[in-house]
Length: 208
Image (cartoon, rainbow, N blue to C red; front, side, top):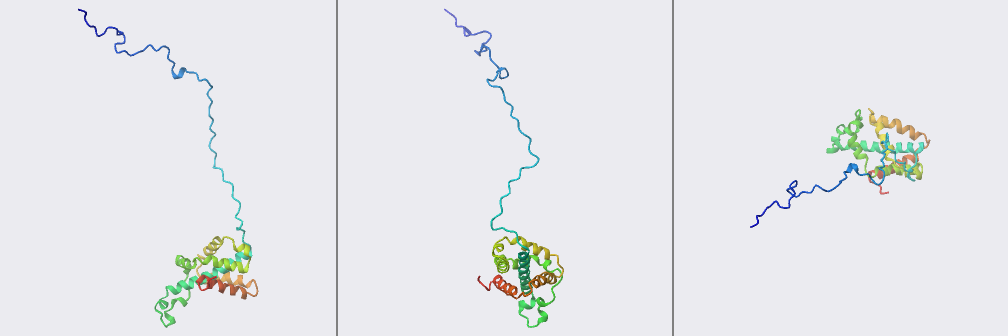
């Protein structure tokens, strides 16, 4: 009777059957690429990002002339005067209760110092209605040129308001700018008529 040998045919040096005779195996370090390696050179970052080319000016944007800037100041100050008067009436006790005595109406008293700076937000909220800039534009169109009236007017108007902000006596400061500008034209009756028109438009009494 032949005995069974479980290790028959098994390599004594590799009892688990794991092959190690794969021949010459080349490692990654020993493989020579078919093409020479090329080094990628990355340029250093620039000191500052390149600036985008400036876009050409909008065809409707033109530089305001001195005459147009003067008229923008005139219209802005006129409407600011109306806004300050309207705000003083809104907070006046005599106007609120419709008191018959003028002594109870603070709105007709002398304007307190730094009134515009103190109540700037409330006054500008009254001034800057959807009709404010169109009213200034309307005056500019009537007194200067149609071409310049198409310009962006928010920036020059904001500059005028900012220049008036630190004034202790806002009424005096506005008069010091407004009256000399109006007197430069000699007969200013036409401009006063245009100012009355834009005031009515700004307040909503005219639907232009």
